[in-house]
Image (cartoon, rainbow, N blue to C red):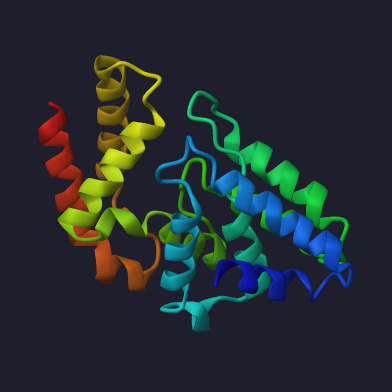
Length: 203
């Protein structure tokens, strides 16, 4: 599904099939890295599946789709500029095509760093898709927690716990975890339950 959807997308802006496949293979390779336990192809697939629920609300679907595919293209747990590097690599690759909304898409990718409420609704949808895992069943959330820990295995428990507690508290301090009505109604309450449960486990 992911490959076909990406190729259908990029073919609108490029008739160079070799280049289109090269772009897909880079995505596949990066998201399939052995160090990725959560930020992988399954994460992208979940976002695409969730997108179906709100697709009618999206103003520019192609921009949002490119942002989904490229938002975690670069992902190194020890770095704090992954989103920026992902946006730059997106620009480098897709500027070879006729796709015109490069700046808007780069801004969406960069927005996944801090997850702040945006004035642009498509950006808010992207952020909610990215965090939809937080509101899934306790069993799915538990697996997500385990996978995130594996990605940060370079850090000893005491360091990881300290950083994770800070992240969880900052999310719980938000007026709302989700930015759009659909995700608020669908996942907000469960997300808060999941986060509080993890926080209690870490304290």
